[in-house]
Length: 443
Image (spheres, rainbow, N blue to C red):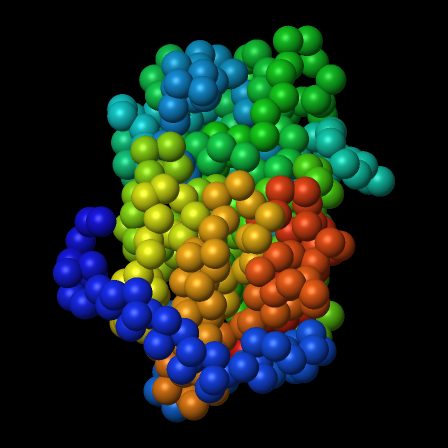
């Protein structure tokens, strides 16, 4: 355990933990054991201390990812590239409307040297194209500039924001971003798996309608790209700080069936478009860094979430990896303290902060009855505090009850289990989105 959080909270013994669990379940048993419809109806509990965030920007994140460290299993980015074009296919949560603008953000978060950025273009996907494929409508290809120049130098560890460009993309529409890297680049910063097929081809192909060019290879990584912002005054933004469940593991690639995709569609249906930023990283935890998966939620909060423009709400979907990923966190008080630190720091930026209960993982390879007790303690405490309007979070969405098997609350319902006992299916992702209400998120 790193940092001061673990030292600040006493570690209760087994007897004390059992007592805490019994007390919490006694207080919130109706919430934890009620039929699913009841749980869905009662997820939002608003705190009197919530502060409205003054909007100082007209930009809102429409598509976002968070970078992870490259390892020996990532040869494309670890070794770098020379004279290659990376083409990404993105589903925007909020579009640009007919006359709006967008901008692209590139980042060298884990790069070790400056990276020369060549031409960068954006375009709408070819009409009627679904699933894998990055062919574009040639009439929409738009070249981006950086400070008026067609290319730029991305410093190691820095973020590079393009100038605004006007291109019409509907809410929930697809955008293709092509980045030429003259190279040699050295190691590149990236997000390992966006669950969408992209393409890497030789030369400057940013203006090519593609992707049917010789020598192309596919990738599911977002290379350097971290976000697309749209200029939409009045459109709220939600940053979702999560793990593999948020990232989209368990849902099919190229289908845009991740939890955040469902959430964006549901929110749009009920109150207009919302910019939803998917900041899920497989293996991510609240408390501990991981050499494979990168910094913890606490360590990356400022860079990945709080630095985003136009965000009104932070939604925290973390905790299951703190329990099941070795070394396991077996003290619920320490995990709860970690949540409260996230809340305090986000509130300092004027954000509303919404928490979620930890979802069932009874069929997962590292599940144990002891870890299940810890999960129930954390969930019961979050719900009990929210029910009194006195919790750390402004609202708590009970994802655990929404996904649980009615016959065994420790497990995902069969329709929601992708097969490993941990990651929800597309139907499970939709159930999660249905649980996170518009009122809970935006007040």
